[in-house]
Length: 404
Ligand code: HSE
Image 1 (tube, rainbow, N blue to C red):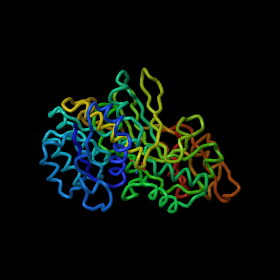
Image 2 (cartoon, helix red, strand yellow):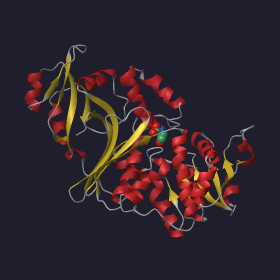
Image 3 (tube, rainbow, N blue to C red):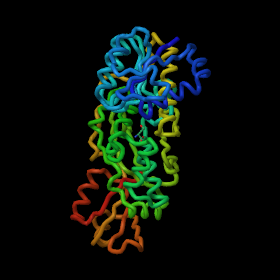
Image 4 (cartoon, rainbow, N blue to C red):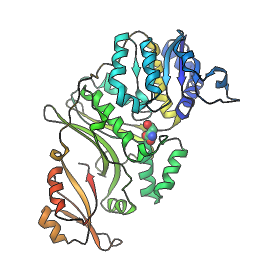
């Protein structure tokens, strides 16, 4: 028997209990042992819920019980999750978590403790909800030098952008819907400002490139400035607006990473990733292109990924299996040197003025927006774009990058 303790009985924690109860036969078979939920830790009581019988309010009970083999951290946030997880690992208990904030901030240290103790710290559910992307990067794509990861990594914002573009939904109303469906973070600012996607691309990049990418170094822009007018232009261009989290290797050892809204054309496999779905596009030097797609947020998809980690840890109780992440820092190049195309909406300007500054551009005029037009630049370095756009002197309404 493998005893587990689940820290947190919220959306994901209750999903973990539900998945283990629903699929216990096949899960036990795959784990090669009976997975027994010995404790659930939460500050609240749940009268009438079967979990009440195994509910504890004090972490000491779990920390001091040598029968607990695996601690499942699904509380979210940095504290007390970090303290609880570190203590569990130090006392030889494997840990799995859905907590991207914890992994992005303390991943190298926690993984190092797990390595020293020959146990595991796994975090499949921290990125891409139910998509098994961490496992793919750690143990499947091992023949490749990966040079790009571009993902739609936040289900809440993808759901919002989709509803806003297809149903004309209002930003606040559709955010509320995403919260009700259990997609959004406790503080949804992390979703809409891109912080959640930023932590996820930091985790995926660290695994893919084998060095630690500090999320605080990643340029991050959310979707709060995206308007229905931007979406109308995108539709006219046959494109969609997506919040992309991307990192790329340029040349031998230069990297950049960013999170921002992008205009994505129909030729990209990311164009049709809609609703709460996530997708992670990976390019490897021998593999070429691959894309991983699936449910990106919500109770059961996330719980599915957590339980997969529990099974892996039960199968490898005394063998560390997470290999490709070191504490060596991954340095990022200046974004000013990164090339791209830029979609720009301007007011009180003329096409001639724009062409004088930017040269040949693609012009978009929409009748419903008199007094303004939009243009797409040719490819140029971001620094060059910023220099040029200064000459438009306050006449820019918005700029959205274009995904090539
Ligand atoms: N708030 C996150 C999202 C949950 O919307 O993607 C899954 O990590």
